[in-house]
Image (cartoon, rainbow over all chains, first blue to last red; front, top):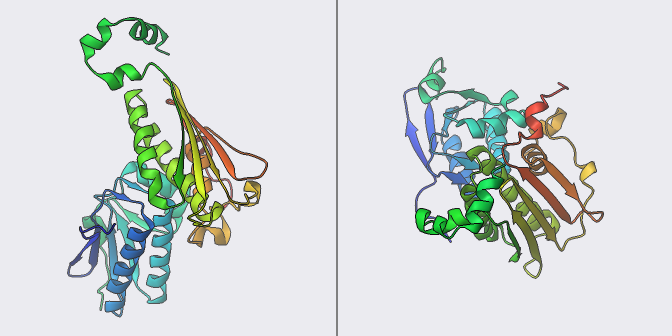
Length: 122
Length: 175
């Protein structure tokens, strides 16, 4: 069954592109695949991007989402761009901590702090 | 814990009238079920909902419920993808027991099994940058007991009410 509701929303701020996950739970492989395609297409639209992923709506995710984030971060790295995550709720942050992904992702408390000190994107 | 109240609720008809809440009453009796579901990722949803609502009725904390939810999702996707290889002719059998102080879940697929000890630690070296291989680690991190049968196609996991997960006491020791 295809979800009608879009799974991400994209906001173009002055120095950053903010992608907000709109679902509370990100679990289904099909959804994860479609989210990934949408994010990749946003990244490809710019030569360089300061991308912020906003998790404020997300209350639950599976390890497949961690895989998605790593694929996104590799793409960002290839394009000499920047990725920041923010608004991760404490239970989900625990997953990042346990898996040590806090070592490879830049995680900020909120969108405001994530947009600070951003270099200008193209 | 709560044995006095448990007995009282089981013995007293007035409890039903007083609380008028069947799910709360049902929490006194352990629920023991066995279900067989198809090898498709969404097939876990119904079973998951039943187990989690029983945990809620049995006053498990939000942290415990989150932990069991995560372990269930990860275990099921492993059974379907790596065990049954998404073969629609194969099923996954899920046995669960929810009592007042623990939840025990067994998941058995029809695949060839695997050796869990051979799964690398996803936290170190190049594994940290891999896009997969974290499911089993998360199950072990969030549940209190995790074991496999000899064939490696059946997983048994237990979470005790309020008992911290092993990961909370295991900060990374390597860099």
